[in-house]
Image (cartoon, rainbow, N blue to C red; front, top):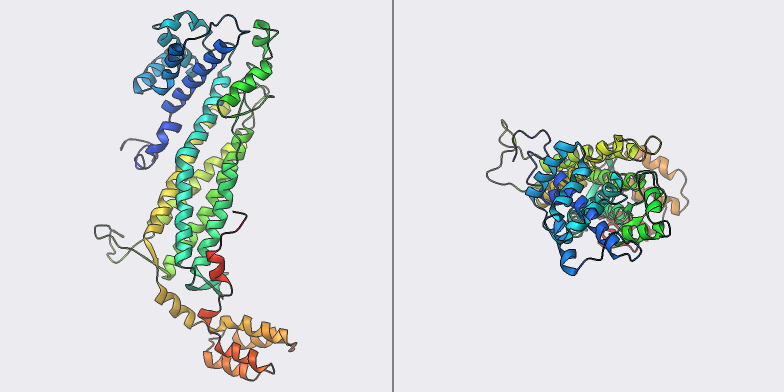
Length: 455
């Protein structure tokens, strides 16, 4: 842990977000830039119409591949030292590659490194690969793990009756499992949106028109060549840009994350409330301290931590979604500074996933408390009684139950006396007589256990 770190991502939570460093750190950005530069040089070498870069041997291709695959901290430090001289981060990467190649059999092609490229040709592809890989290899597995934990909690509590609360007031009963399943379903849907996101890339020069490329090789189909290069990296080609890839897909990705984060934040707040009401007990760890002064407390800190990190993540993503697609004329650099914080937003979302799942691992439904609360809420059966009355065309059904139950403490006997006096078929009367709050759960258990085709 870095005690002097300004950001908790690199301080207090450094260990937790460590898996993201290989994808979202400045070191990772350098490594991905080197990868793109090396792959571009190999692509030039492989095209028969490009005569100034000779074909490479398999061993020379391995040399180029190793520039990124074996990229280490020493390489990163060397690039930083070059950047200190050039005051340009992408040019420093170019000079680093030229240095490395000058010591090999590829010394004759060093002048072709960064051929016809503008900085964003390298950067936009590097960032797209960074985000794709960080989300796919670290964030997404944790999101799926959390949803799996929600599914398990929903299944294990599918039949556990819960007094619902609408507007904070006692309402028609449901089951704890069904309410948890609602969030699993919502999160799974938002995750599909993130999974389906395209990662776009462009490789078309200083203003997106292949100007230098065309002068060097006017007969070459640069549009098709660039398309194959971008798609060869596993990205979607954007054929029409200014100097920069317009970042629209990054705004889309940010907004998709915001929706996922918002659903998870909603869940965390509900869990906080359920714990506060005593619906869930938190498992106790002997050495933990809940309060510095109140020994009895077991605080829902994991859900609170998740809520805080989700808020920070969404705040950053909201700015990025607004800012990144906007650039003056053919480009300005304000997007570059903003883009460096995209990984920070992902990291806070990842922290929230870890915290929420840790919170889930520590809760257990207090079935006795849930049953006791339902046993004091006979008024919630008013909905069922007035609905059966309407079925048999009894006048003023809603109004009669409103008069009996609204704002009142209703006992089982009060409701039974009311039902007994109704002019409805005996079978329906007996069914209503047998009804209890903990049995008035509709199809909630089925819904908690069912996986829907849309998922």
